[in-house]
Image 1 (cartoon, rainbow, N blue to C red):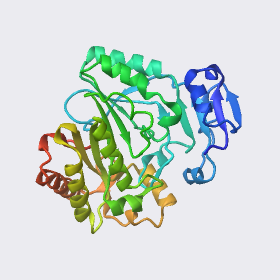
Image 2 (cartoon, rainbow, N blue to C red; image 1 turned 30 degrees about the vertical axis):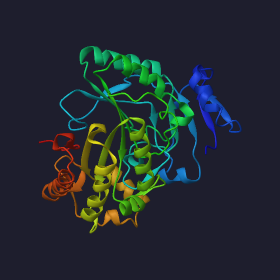
Image 3 (cartoon, rainbow, N blue to C red; image 1 turned 45 degrees about the vertical axis):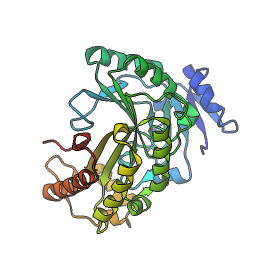
Image 4 (cartoon, helix red, strand yellow; image 1 turned 120 degrees about the vertical axis):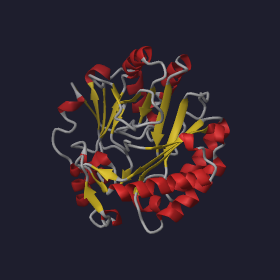
Length: 332
């Protein structure tokens, strides 16, 4: 998978570092002082990840747990995301990472104890805080090589009012399937219609495979979250979401469905420029996008609200409780 592994000298003997290296015994290793000395110093084209990808292992410095923007998650509680990795092995055409970092190379941060310490400080101030993993990476795609989630499970067992969300498109549940399901931990899957998934979610497990994984987790007792986000409008969108929501309503018992978020595709101007460069033939670009009041490229407000409310209505018609549905990144 990786051409080369770069490791910060200070953490070469760390337990998590050693765990990762057991999976890549023949991969060349180079030691450095800090990840930032090499990673992102020279701009590397996003699509170079298809042929040349490196792995960096280091310690994340500074603010490890950050307050999330408005309408990021369910409810009125405080929402935070924590940073345990940069970049993703998947290649969704709309992914904002292609315009966010200078490099598609993967970075794994191994100072989970320090992340948890910062979480504890947030919980001491707001016991019912939410914590989200998967902002800058997929939370499960590489979790079998890092195997850190049991440490976080221990934290959320002790802090029962706090909540954890693992955001993913992966079917790689090796690291969590044998952990005790907790009422305050949610495994959240991003889903689209079956055809939309094939068209736009490149190199990810199929939507059908994700549904099978949801079924496995539900059968084990896990709580599930669903993200219909970002919705990319096509002529078959409404039909597609009628189909996928019908599956979800039958698959997940009401007591195991924590929330459904609904959002539409949106880009910063820098990300949109990269999308145009990387996927110039994508039908996603043949949309009626406008430059919005906040500088983002997205559908007009009437179009956006129609898509969001139509998908929400489909959920409600399938007997999904309206109270578990929220509109992602849409302020009142």
